[in-house]
Amino acid sequence: MAHQHDVLVIGAGGAGLTAALYAAHRGADVGVISKLYPTRSHTGAAQGGIGAALGNVEEDHWEWHMYDTVKGGDYLTDQDAAEVFAREVIDAVIELEHMGLPFDRLPNGKIAQRRFGGHTKEWGKAPVHRAAHAADRTGHMILQTLYQQSVKRGITFYNEFHVLDVIFNEEGRAIGVVALEFATGELHTFQAKAIVIASGGFGRLFKVTSNAFTLTGDVQAILYRKGWIPLEDMEFYQFHPTGLYRLGILVTEGARGEGGILRNAQGERFMERYAPTIKDLAPRDMVSRAMYLEIKEGRGCGPNKDYICLDLTHLDPEIIEKKLPDIAEFSRTYLGVDPLKEPIPVVPTAHYAMGGIPTTLDGAVIKDGQGTEIPGLFAAGEAACVSLHGANRLGTNSLGDLVVFGRRAGLAAARFAQANTFVDLPPDATGPARELIEGLKGNTGGESPFAIRKDLQETMMENASVFRTEELLEKQVGILKDLFERYKKVTIEDKGDRYNADLVEAIELGFLLDNAEALVHSAKNRKESRGAHAREDYPERDDENWLKHTLVYREAPGKVRFDYKPVVITKFEPKPRVY
Ligand SMILES: Cc1cc2nc3c(=O)[nH]c(=O)nc-3n(C[C@H](O)[C@H](O)[C@H](O)COP(=O)(O)OP(=O)(O)OC[C@H]3O[C@@H](n4cnc5c(N)ncnc54)[C@H](O)[C@@H]3O)c2cc1C
Image (cartoon, rainbow, N blue to C red; front, side, top):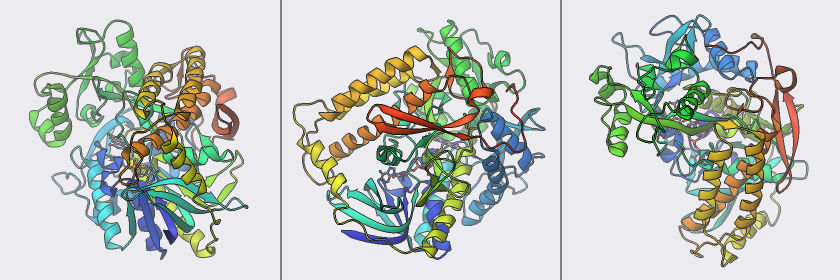
């Protein structure tokens, strides 16, 4: 079946819905394609809050928020993006409130705010209350609110449609999309004047992850496979310090924001040694590394000394039940640990992609280090890299990113659609997608996607996670080559058309492998330590050679090419990063 919309958005999380709403507001006819029912998007799992210098609890300024973001990103953050963000997120939060988002309140009726890692006042002096929240279900409330507004606006949704290809014309303009309808197995074509990609992250690359099963970096991979569209800063992948032991299910940083403390087996508050000023509220890359080191040096908790204790037992039980109800419940349900009475066992968990599809401040996707825009193609949210988060994202800055840059991408897409006409799709637009599906259904006698995915996740965890070395990354390059070979023969049992989850899993595994390739090669290439990219063999940050963004292109399977993009520095010269 063929469809047509002025603006087509891929993804119905916070970024996609914001883009859709603003494009519709500008008068565009908008369609949204989502492989999930919209309110099941991962944005709905976000817990702790959305950061904005509202100053409701204490004095705060957008400049401080900008500074924290740049420093948190280990100076790889583009400072023009950080400025736009820190200014515009204030209005964006108030706008969400006006749309009906039920934020927690202060006694005076204003939106409540709590502390979060790396957010400070007076240029790093002490933690500040900046995260607006709705208990520990902030993302759920944002997603519900945005979806209600989208329905009210009459936006067309294609739910449980998997995008398998983006179509370009000879001039390199994005003109349409091909998607598989889960219920029927039918391939649909979508013609669009402008396309916004908001398809989220790829945390399922790793074994221990906070990310939902569906976060497989699909559209990053679709573009990367074209060979002429790069991915930016893929080596920077964030590990959140507090995932439930063994499971990776997230315990929000809000738990530390409310006063929770990390302790080693000796009961020591070890973050005092690593970040004397803001301690447990240091940025995530630093806390995750400190936890790894504590465990490595034999000070981990438990019989196997392989986790850290998140201690909330000194907090007022009412704070836990009212402000952190979900994480208390997760801890009781999944670990049988009551956080009122004993500490929660935690380990770092794969959480967030700082890198992704490179864009301008208006969400236009670019194809090289000079910032050349690809006409008709926009991206926002975790799938994109604007680069607001640099080498390490601060907590609460993703939800803000979704609404600030989702809005900008939606408006820019609507403007592009107003100025341009539809382009006819090639006669066999669905060809490559059909080949992909038929190829997978035709394979016999190979392994299941499950076996390959398990090996991918375990080896990525071992060789490309919190600490990295040339040797480990080189090893992982070899492992990936092997996994790609095995994937060629991947075999699925279900050969049918309707609700073929087997097929979808196999397709998503292919996307994950592509993201892994881009990540591992970029990590091997960057010979320094910065933010979330910690090289044991190159422990120092090297501004002279590496204060630049990586752009990675696929030349051929297993073979990549690099280009670089300068970091935008406006207000804050790079300095050593101490907390
Ligand atoms: C457990 C958890 C807690 C978090 N807590 C916070 C927090 O407190 N504060 C904060 O700032 N950040 C938090 N984050 C990070 C933040 O929630 C995410 O980065 C953000 O929600 C991503 O939003 P998005 O709109 O980019 O993508 P998502 O919300 O992940 O949505 C992706 C969308 O793309 C669609 N899609 C993907 N592939 C395809 C395809 N091939 N075809 C069609 N559709 C497709 C999906 O259906 C979905 O609708 C948290 C993340 C996790 C995992």
